[in-house]
Length: 298
Image 1 (tube, rainbow, N blue to C red):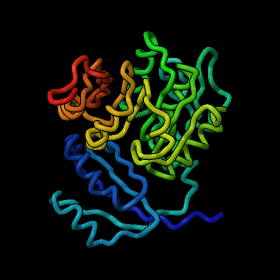
Image 2: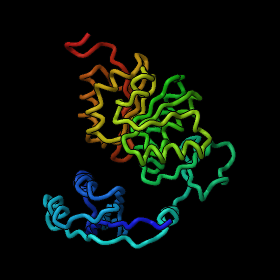
Image 3: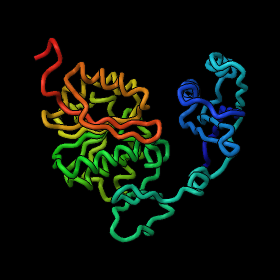
Image 4: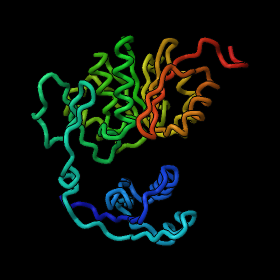
């Protein structure tokens, strides 16, 4: 099957941008493609950013989107026809996260003894375990597993499905997972089948908690959501409605600098901080129902 024609909008910076500036720039580029990469170059002195999609972006639209970032010169060009799956696998070594051995298809059968292998091929979805938010969520789940026996987990914004798979292995109960991106749902289902979890993990297309399967399945005593700060804030009332009284919510995808806003939004709907995990600039917040309801609510 012939690969579809792809186009890229790329930027090469002669400096390493500040975190907030970089995130804003990534957000400006995201609408022009389906996959975005962003990484250091020149030994940490520079930065490369690229978004790839099937439609050629309008140069005028790209220029307008980058207007707040003065002095940038984006390059819009066709992407060379390559086996991108094979390219992405080069140098992608297996990853050890607690008891989990996360690897791609190219390392199948190479897991050492006494680990739980998880084969994760991301495709167009987020969550290979290599980002601080994913590994931080796994650390939070491992900590919770020492004192809790969850019976009804839910993963919002499941991406590759990695957190749902980790929850199943830790608690050995059926897991519901949802994502608003159909490509992510497809990838997560494929990964579930590869890992022998097709019947254990129910994966649905859902914008937050809106899918009937998610609304009908609650309340949940464990909710994981590794998305972004703004969606977490928007979904706070839904989380409060769907979280069981003694449940825990593991939230990430936010920077340490965004903790205050995310916690405040959840405190307003009756949730409070249980504990947090910080890894570099990123944060994982574990929330629970507050002992007392917020002012004005009973």
